[in-house]
Image 1 (cartoon, helix red, strand yellow):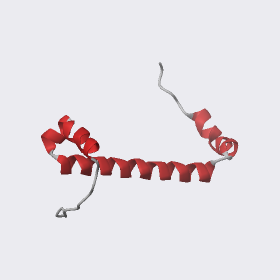
Image 2: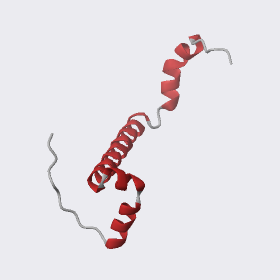
Image 3: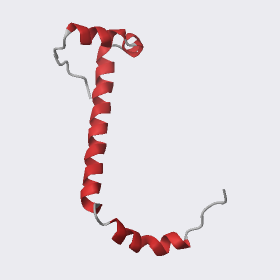
Image 4: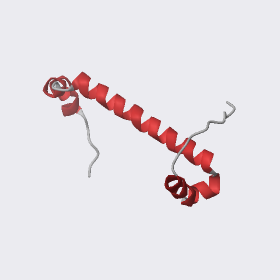
Length: 80
């Protein structure tokens, strides 16, 4: 997908810190900012998934453990 230019504003000190980063010097501001945004979105998605899991299974740990206890007992673990 072709990139579209987007104008953003940031204070001079923040921009100076970004420009001082070796990755920015090597790859450029746009690539650095895209990478940072992608990382933020992945972390946010992971947090949302974790929250959904906590909501779905929260308070039911004993019930879930009971359901899988036979499987866990039959499991063979590699020797240490």
